Image (cartoon, rainbow, N blue to C red; front, side):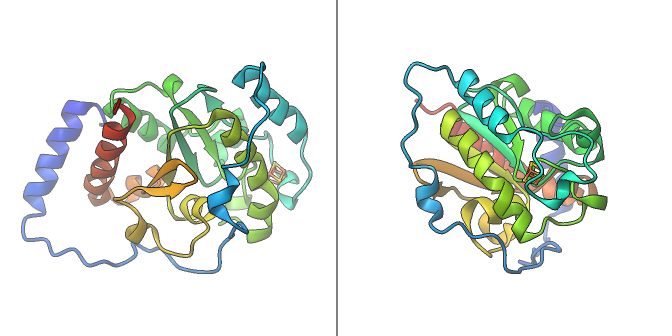
Length: 239
Ligand code: SF4
């Protein structure tokens, strides 16, 4: 469980069981490959926005209206619902995953399945609520059989995520898993290499960590995730 006390207990238990564990820097089953690369990812979120007198909620709704019943890529064919994203339009912290899964496709909401429940516990463990943060994905429609997104699908969909981020202007982004991290940061480096430290995207601090669905299959990675989340928590509450 990811309530603070049980997570700490779990970490202590893991540390005990991991005593003497010589962790290799294997890429945790993560394959490298040519991923989406924005032309200049450091500039993507530094564009000026026309927020003026409109609330962030209204501006996000405008992005949603612009997206419409999107048919810009092949993923529209089998989706049940577009999963736009949800949460605090003025969030200081945004979580970004890869794409909706089956539960999310059914409900039209991000991270509502088992992995989503774990994400909710992770958020609680850093003393926040889901309603404090904003949660979205790189893709807004479910890839068939949860396959990896294709580069052209990412290229087509990610501008809408960028628009959401331009409206929200978070201080911190936590990317969940390899694909979200590579797509947002425009890198081919693996999640094992990237996690554990902040990366700058414009002025936003980006902390890559493991995807909750990966954690469900690889419990031993919870310890590293907790370390990442402690850094996020510290940054979040910093004055
Ligand atoms: S994944 Fe994105 S670009 Fe593709 S159809 Fe869905 S909303 Fe449109």
